[in-house]
Structure formats: C-alpha cells, structure tokens
Amino acid sequence: DTHPIQYQVVKLITAYQKQPNLTVIGDPLQSIYGFRGANSDIFHQFQLDFPDAQSIALTINYRSRPQIIKLSHSLFPESQLLSASIQDPAQINFITTLNEQSESQWIINSINQQVGGTDLNQASDYQHADQHLNFADFAVIFRTHHLAHALETALEKSGLPYQTVGGLSL
Image 1 (cartoon, rainbow, N blue to C red):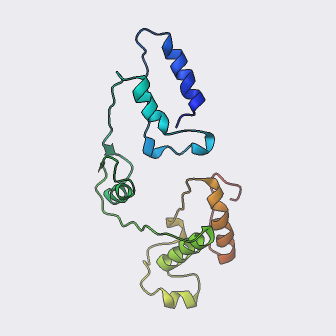
Image 2 (image 1 turned 90 degrees about the horizontal axis):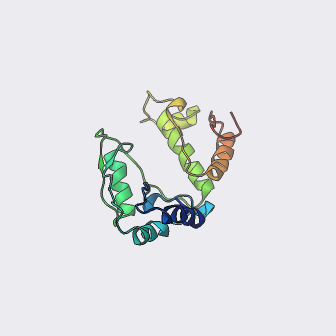
Image 3 (image 1 turned 90 degrees about the vertical axis):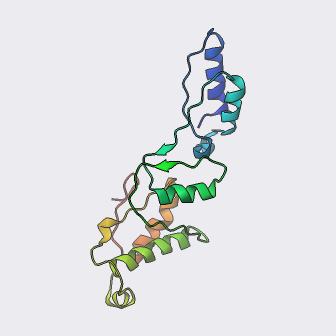
C-alpha cells in the first residue's frame, strides 16, 4: 500500500548502500489505499528494481475460517489458496445489493429474522428465529466509513438499537 513517491524515497535510500538491507511486507490483492494514491503495480516494480530480493509467501490465514478463504479465492482465483488455522464451521452469505440503502435494509431484515423480530407481526413471520440471539450478538464492520451513514439512517428509521464505534453516534 505504497504511494509512488514513498517508493521513490525507499529507492533513493537504498541506492547508496552496497548491499541494501530492506524488508517489505505486502499483498497486492489487499492494496486498499488507492484513495490515498497507493498503487499495487509497485509490487511488480519492486521485483524489477530489487531482483535479488527473497520473497516469502505466507500461506496460513490466522483470522478467517475456511469458508471465507474459499469465497475470497473464488473472487481472486489467480491468488494462492491459503489454508485456515481456524477450523470451526461457520456459514457465510455472499449477497449483492443495488445500493447502500438496499444493503442496509438487507442487514436490518437479516437481524430481525434472526432475533425473531421487534413486534408481534414480525414475530409471527420469523417463527424459526434463533431464540438465543439478541441485538448485542450482531456487529457490522465497514471497510470504509462512508458506508456507515446509510445503515445508521436505516437503523434510526427501523427502531433497532445500535451503537457506533469509531463514528459520531454512541
């Protein structure tokens, strides 16, 4: 997640060393800072500029379950398939929505369905809800903060209790 100017600074620093001692860590498939000018092409350029660099691939994922790794690999089939250190069963859903509002409504409906609804009408609709779940059992994590606004607006309209962390509302 390096900006081209940052990369040029690294090259200038190492240019005056007989044997540069440089360690870099990165993954071009997780280059998320494009909005800050980062460019994943720098990974390829690094290999050209430092042909003697040793590359060590990390092949074990310590954060995700096998289902998430498998889904991720289906999105990026050219990437190396990782193995998961966590081997506990979990269900994931991959959904596509039209926009932030429909995504927010899907999240609210999903939570309502799993807790059994918030009123008697919904309770009769969601007879197969998990009786052991409550609102505190759910979290929505955003990759970028701007996506939170649509969900917060929809949550306010729905009356579901919520708390934001890292945002403005508490």
